[in-house]
Image (cartoon, rainbow, N blue to C red; front, side, top):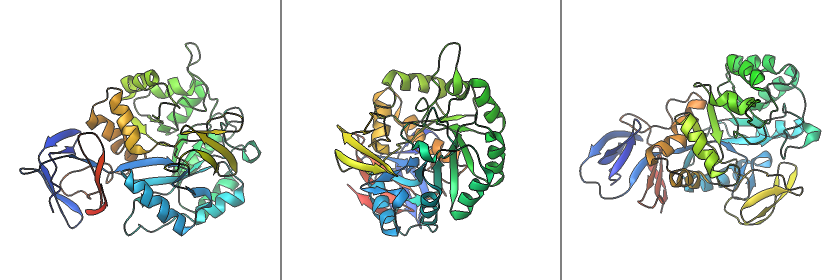
Amino acid sequence: MRLGVQACLVDGRLEPGDVEVEDGVVVAVGLEGGSRGVALPGFVDLQVNGFAGIDFLGADADGYREAADALLETGVTAFQPTFITSSEADLVTALRSVPLEAPARGPRVLGAHLEGPFLSATRLGTHPARYRCDPDLALLERLVVAGPVRMMTLAPELPGALDLVDALHARGIVVSLGHSNATAAEAHAAFDRGVRTVTHVFNAMRPLTHRDPGIVGAALVRPDVVVQAIVDGVHLDPDVVRLLWSVAAGRFALVTDAIAAVGLGDGDYALGSVDLEVNDGIARRSDGVLAGSTLTMIQALRNLVELGVPLERAAEAASLTPAGVLGLGDLGRLGIGRRADVVVLDDNLEIERVLVAGETRVAG
């Protein structure tokens, strides 16, 4: 099957020509005869709290299918359901509900992202303070046993946090720093321990100042650390995004931090046990604190391109780089012999088609 595209993103370059797919994998690129559009790797989102009316913390199998179908329409072919700080009972139930088998038609669930509960009491953002706690190896063990934990966000300055990092790494779980009041020295200590990424950089963490660079400054000067960013025009000023890109291009991962309100418009919603309100597409708790986003990955990519980032680099920030955070070399790339998870965009960066393993699942 030919995709009929004019170009394809291969090894960081937009190569002219069409793409051929057979038995779910790419078998040829650069073929003559394509007429329109560009083929990009399917998007990989590391932080999705919910989507299309579904909050993953309370989702069942039907809810996952419904949300996954909606995610696919935005170009996401792999994602991590994300659970904010909650009671142990709610987290255990949520982890037990995460689908373990690859879906027949939708995006792959890459395992769960636990955003908490081992967070700074002073940088909680919208996370409920009553469920926050210091690192607890016994609690960690109970959570890991409950379901497929793939990533955990924690504050490295907390007592016992570095031991927890070691325990997570020993289990093959990715650690991300976030919701943290860490100094630069405390952040560097975690990076030296093997931590390689930061959750929604700048948000819910110690600010960057000229004498106190904090976690942000430490991350930006480390060439081995990926910064995850919510590029929705709300969480980060456009000039901050440009600054981040100028320093961290190639290790800049787009995430949405999406909530159940995505695609449904303004109104009242829930993020775990937190009630929130969406006005003009911006989600906030009753006290005005930001509470996730209504961003989609395709819009995040467009926003990055509008800020001057070339399409091929923005596409990597939505696919290759986040896949690399999880050590998944089979995701986020297109090329001969690779699985055909593909997003086809037109000249206006609108989605024309989405393929999962070579099968068209969304047609514009």
